[in-house]
Length: 120
Image 1 (cartoon, helix red, strand yellow):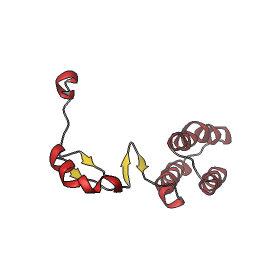
Image 2 (tube, one colour):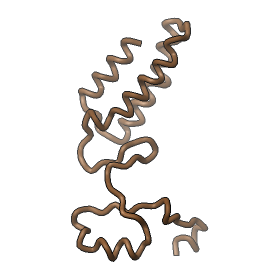
Image 3 (cartoon, rainbow, N blue to C red):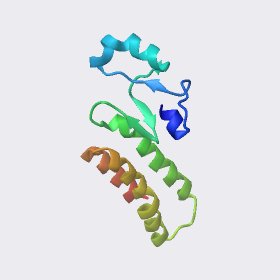
């Protein structure tokens, strides 16, 4: 009915069904009914990890590595102090804000981010 009304179609080869521990007793019936593969957490969606627990430092490694790679790319450029400040405010802080809109980022991760930004 959804595809008839919207014109959109679900792709079973790209879709996964992630079940909670409370739905395990209906696992075979659910997987057979929708035709999806069974998926497991954590998965990435729009660049963010989807996890079932609180966010740990290890879950934020992709954010820290993305910040590091951006800074590494800018290190070779002869940028003024004002240009570096502008890059930090517009690019690097936007990465942090994007993650913060989805998760409560721990103080340890925020300290790591600030340490990288200060060193740049």
